[in-house]
Amino acid sequence: MAKTKLKTTPYDSAEYLKNKKDVAAYLDAALEDGDPALIRHALNVIARARGMMQIARDSGVTRESLYRALGENGNPEFTTVLKVVHALGMRLRTRPA
Image 1 (cartoon, rainbow, N blue to C red):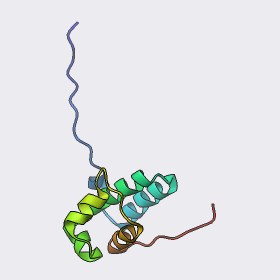
Image 2: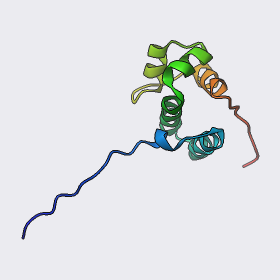
Image 3: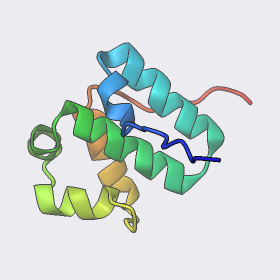
Image 4: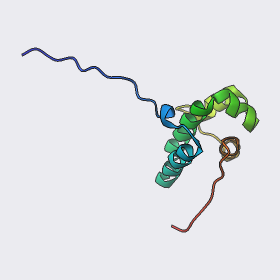
């Protein structure tokens, strides 16, 4: 029996974040989950979708520091998270659980 080769294409969530509403929903879902690694990953995806250089400029964080903080092994400080969220034109809010 011959094996059929499966053709796959890369998937990048950043391609689907077209507007602020999409970004807010994506970040909200990550925050709802509560996993810090997932939140860091979501911020990385969003920053790439918006342009890492622009987010770095708007947040006052160097591009290199932003890549390090939001990268796979990153552990961003809360101040960095707040700066990035603000640079995205978003704000963190709370609501009763």
